[in-house]
Length: 226
Image 1 (spheres, helix red, strand yellow):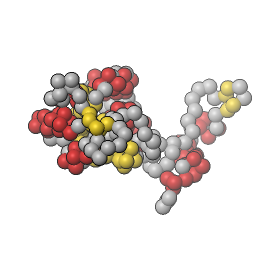
Image 2 (cartoon, rainbow, N blue to C red):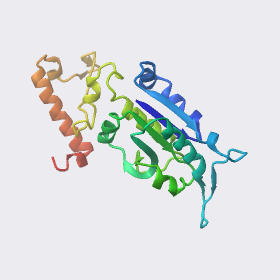
Image 3 (cartoon, rainbow, N blue to C red):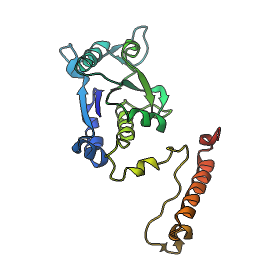
């Protein structure tokens, strides 16, 4: 998979993709990640990428020209399955969305800033708009990092144990059950006996029950229609 991220703050995205699973995905060749500085495509001698909004009001707006020039350049080089804009008024990121996006070959992610981007970019180029929550960040970079992580970990071969992604929270519409590891007892706190029994049928039934109980307690909205 190739992901191109468009931003005015490229340095902000170096750390999230330079360690752990994201680094390993790139090293193994599962992920080709390119971070593009929108300022490089500004025709302004000061590399300005924003201007005051028409009609007045507080806050600057990201200009259409540098973003359009960059997107057009990338589109001339390859086909993109989605051009995504990270925005608070986009659709809320869900596991199902990440699952679908992980099947694509090429994705562009545009990070907004200031008061937003010129609406004409959204109308002409953007095919999908995503929000990571009902709150506002200083820019789309952190949201883009979250989105990429949620997608790339699903690509076959990225995780050491591929089945672990299939048993994550939300994959079956439920939260994950509690998990334990050694030692079996610590300061009087014991691991549930069923997990030590070796009876995998009982263990699976216990996990399904606990997943349902945890979801009902913490995210009952996920059970709507079940």
